[in-house]
Length: 222
Image (cartoon, rainbow, N blue to C red; front, side, top):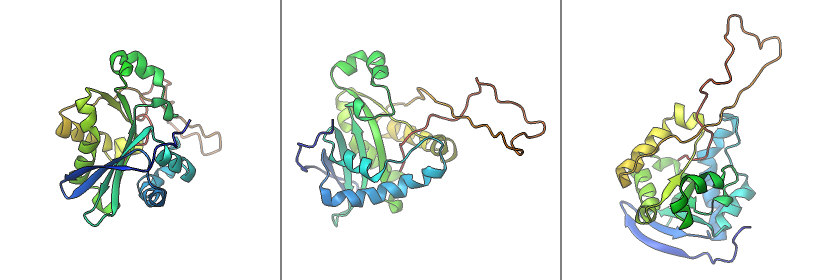
């Protein structure tokens, strides 16, 4: 059930680098469209680049913004313009594409104290998709997790991981900002078969079911 009772109150986390950061549980209604525009710029192109659905609908995105169980770390310019957001939660039941039971079984001690987190998404203004800004955004977002000795997980599609290299980039950011190393934990493979006249290519080998296909689809991006 979506948490709607929390007021849209921002906790000021001060300035980090050139940007000011806040921690928010519920985003003010007048800012939802602003953030949705940033979200569309970051994730919209994945509609045609990933077989798995990567992009929240406008209604789903608005629900995330109103859900108090999803913590949002927001970056602002000195002029007060929102330019980035990292959204994460330790209520894993709010992330419909993952299995909370997996994490409860794998990390029972952290799970018992609410210290298992999942990144819903990370996004940045197109002009700020550089390492310095992403470092600051992720660092602010994981500070509380480091203090909590927590575990966090995230996912991304093969296009972002294999072609854009965002998986390696994310791993470098976590190691640089928190001294923590990430590893690939799981994968789901997608296949397609073309039964039309052009589907059979002369001499093409059949892909065995055990073929190590692309990385698990997901939603971490910038």
